[in-house]
Image 1 (cartoon, helix red, strand yellow):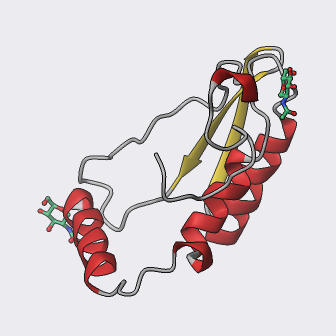
Image 2 (tube, helix red, strand yellow):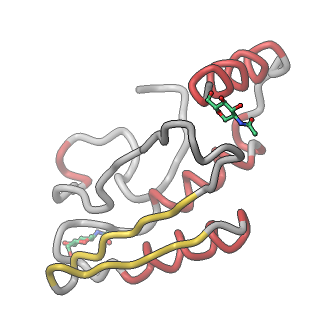
Length: 119
Ligand SMILES: *[C@@H]1O[C@H](CO)[C@@H](O)[C@H](O)[C@H]1NC(C)=O
Ligand SMILES: *[C@@H]1O[C@H](CO)[C@@H](O)[C@H](O)[C@H]1NC(C)=O
């Protein structure tokens, strides 16, 4: 059900998005903001926690923070469904990244959040 909704939303955005102006898309802007946080492993991840807390507050969903290892927060955001007898779906990602230096051959500085045509 959830996947159907996501696929439908993606399809709708493709149909409704000509001409495409990614720079003004709120999702793209939010993602750029996220990418601009230097999350290199062992950096202070508190700015990421604050980023997710803000999004959770905006979406009015709960955020729980666990810290099994100091400096390595685990965040859990929960969206309650309308029918608790149905299965849940989980999206999972890590917040930190391997070191990325501009001299590694990036087209744009790795934490610039630049949106360009080149891949
Ligand atoms: C990101 O953080 C790493 C590790 O602290 C640091 O070496 C690097 O210079 C930072 N990059 C930028 C663009 O600030
Ligand atoms: C919740 O889902 C179950 C399983 O599909 C269904 O039998 C039930 O009618 C649903 N309840 C509501 C309130 O939609």
